[in-house]
Length: 258
Image (cartoon, rainbow, N blue to C red; front, side):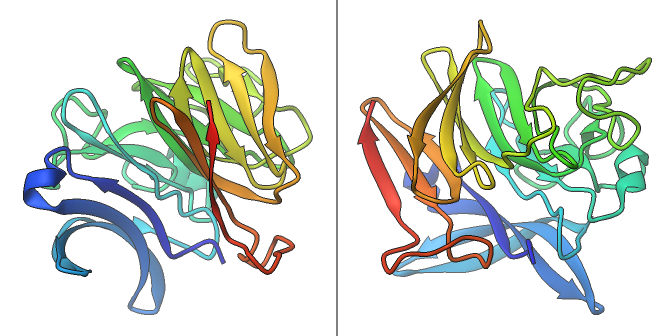
């Protein structure tokens, strides 16, 4: 299904400590479960060091799994609803949330409750900070995929989706309408968010000021993630996951000039 090794970030001091953090699914008492662990590069392999956060509900779908460092030094973690939508509104569950933890794996001070930073998420698949503002991409149901400006609020799933409104719940900053594109990884450059799409099979960009969307790459099949540095845009195709149409050279990491 959609479980496995789902997210990875390097420690801010990676050059010195060779440590990274991984979100992955594993079987715990015959139940899919997700956790965040620290791993260390030793020679030509990675060695597991410690568990930061365990018992994040898992399933064959909707596991979330993205990791991103915040400007305050916290690690942000996306968790899907584990195919149980009602968990997204349960403040005592880690499912359907964006979590915020310390590098030691403790709840970060100021969270809504415990590890929970925001709630009401279906399956967030991308995280990026633009200055001090966190953005997340999220798979909707029957379309209605979202990009949200994340704060310590309730983003509505499954009570509302798309352009629906309800008191105390956040309507998306941007949503695609009834035709799904399945947004995955996101990155930012020059006041523009770049987001990979799986069903949409494109790399797209949305202007943060005008919300105008344009296509950067197409005809490459499913695109899973995107990364940007000073000179280039990198993206990964994901056509061998059982849902794409792979070529003999898939999957690929592609670099294009900005």
